[in-house]
Length: 68
Image (cartoon, rainbow, N blue to C red):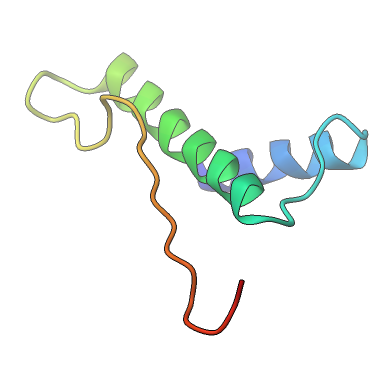
């Protein structure tokens, strides 16, 4: 599943439908997409109590000291 998602992102970027992440905000959106993709898989195919990922995606970024 990870490889398929990576390939999908690559195709979207190559076709001009998705720009590669360049800022914290871009990386935030990409990270959310990965988590939500995995969440959708577990929601669709996981048994109750076996959904290790799901329930939305929250992200928090903290700037590295000395870098703006």
